[in-house]
Length: 141
View 1 (cartoon, rainbow, N blue to C red):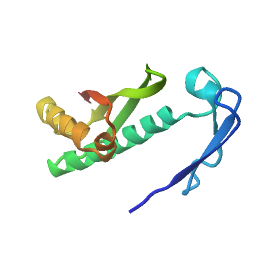
View 2: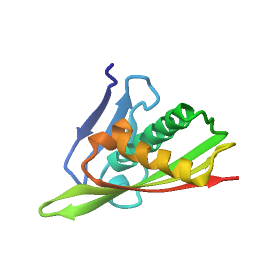
View 3: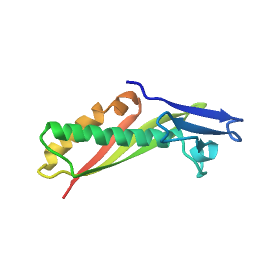
């Protein structure tokens, strides 16, 4: 299975602008640029999109792990905070912190924590990232 996205850029790093699109059309020429990446300008940025991908992947993988344990979540809400740091002459994504809150009838905290930690290591997006990945997972009533 292959999924695709594309980006278009024109101009210099600070004065240029670009768009990001996905083959599914969910993103269609979504604007991005220096201001949306390094300041508070309008548009998206690669780190935000990596965060969305990681949060979505983790949530689905957690549902799978819970299902394998005979549990079904009423809800799983995950936020991914992606950190971009200066690295020599460039930048590196150095960490991703996942913050997950889930309502899982019949689950105990120890079982949930074990499955969440396994999911943090095993979800496909976690596997592709070199950054340090941390997790704060809580089972809610």
